[in-house]
Structure formats: structure tokens, C-alpha cells
Figure 1 (cartoon, rainbow, N blue to C red):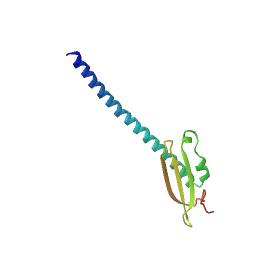
Figure 2: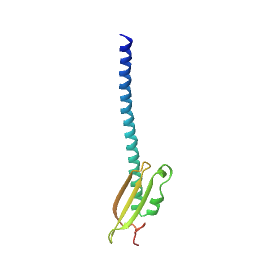
Figure 3: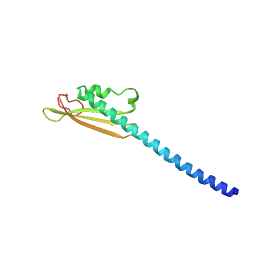
Figure 4: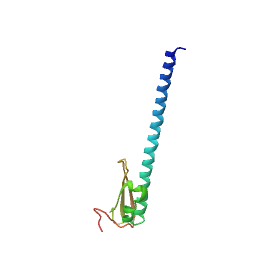
Length: 116
């Protein structure tokens, strides 16, 4: 084996190692994005449950601690005489927005455009 063959083998080995590292980096990035998306949905569901229990103001102000990086907007609007619509919109630190809607009975309308 000559020195040229050894150098060529090292170059090929280095290029394949860089390819594997790129695959691992892409996988780590995908896991991080999935974790942020899951947390965004959890924040929206927590706001929805608080609003469905009748305290939309508390649901709006409930972001504390690690959730403070998220922006959450909770609105309760009159949908019909018996039903109200709860709309929870959460924006993640990456700028991804998620909107959750639910029709409920017995929750007082609040927020912009609410009729009391």
C-alpha cells in the first residue's frame, strides 16, 4: 500500500463520517422541532381546559415559568344562545402558530367581540 492509497482511503473515510454526522444532526433537529410542537399543543390544551372550566382570564394569564416563552391568546365568543366558542391560539418561540377551537356550554363570553 502506497502513501497515495492511504491518503485516498482517509479522504473517503472522512467524507463518509461527515455524511453520517449530517444525518445525526438532521435527526436531532427533527426531535427538537417535534418537542417544541408537542409543547405548543400542550400549552394550547391547558389554556382550553382552563377556559372550558369557566375562567378564560386565568387561562389567558396562566403562562408562567418555562411557558413564558410562548404567546397564548384565549377568547370565548358567543356561538349561539346555548353554546360558546373557545378559541386558543398559541405561538411558539420559533414563530409556529397553533389554533384550537371548541364549542362549550355555560362559559361566559370574554375577549374582543364578545357579547355579554
